[in-house]
Image (cartoon, rainbow, N blue to C red; front, side, top):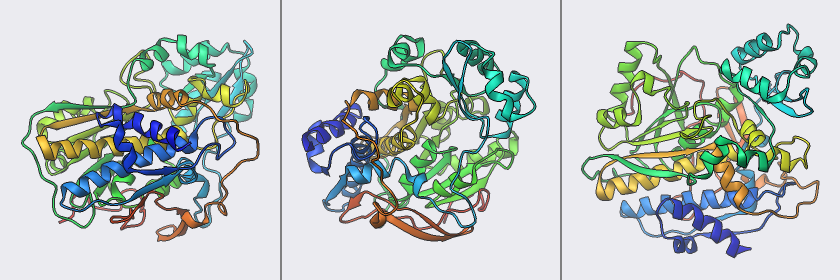
Length: 458
């Protein structure tokens, strides 16, 4: 099984232009199944974090540090793809996604469609399209629609909802074909700049400044992973944007949080000032969203030559769905994962595998680009998506998985931490990657959005 794990890790390295043989530098062990799914969640998680460990070690050596031992196993890898299962916030229940509208609904043509209505404006839009006032009427209203007709009607309103497709249907779909032609991730030089050595510090990313313009899970995991290796991560949000408080906690370890309204000239000027002194610009909005505000990869590289721009979205930059909204569960639904995992009945994986994998891979790509910037200079674009991650996960093979497998809090008790926060003492999964010289850690607790000034630390 270790051979298969090394092969999976090698695939990630290869897509980043790194010799696959370097997978031998990571102690990666274990086997699937770890959870009740045939998909190799433990192996994928261990490989993604193993890649992060290799990139982190390389940056440490660039700083003048020595070699170190890096290890990860499938138990830790699987747990890291479902960290929300271990999050306990005082005086808050365990439920995180509670809208009655959300979930799978039967359609008139005997298919299934998944609605995603966790934000109020999504709920209002779906009610209007379905012509309902009460959320309990949603199943009956959906049953009056053919699935693809409703999918298109909701998409026309910018609402996230997708028909459940099997693997064959997805492979034949224009979006499935477009994604199939893309690698797992891309690291592209987009501008010229002189080589920029890493600043002096105690951790591999000490002194690296990261602007985190991301939301929900996948994008924020990129910033959180960079923070646990020493980066100064400043998350930029705005007071008018909806959010899920539990995810602010889960994704906020190691970060500061500031509000800046990019709808205003003042807000855009503030962001431009931050970009001038940033090293990484990480964003997870749909293609074109930030470009409309003047912050495309090329524009940001012009503002700050030498920037590493990480762009993570749902459906990739290619294909007819490139500008559609999407989330982990919806990508599972459309790409055949939910169909296969449920044996034809819609069922999501036992964790947000696409979100967490994509977030870790985004951090890996950023660190590879930072090393290239130190060695050869340039501005860099790291580009990936949940859909590309889904294709990769599906390509890894399957395991025979009996029912009832789980990783409870007791099963990962050695990985659980408690942290005092503005919400009280929070119980959560800590960093799972093991590194002998620079063990990952968070130097600050999560904080409410808008808690800090939009400024870099001195």
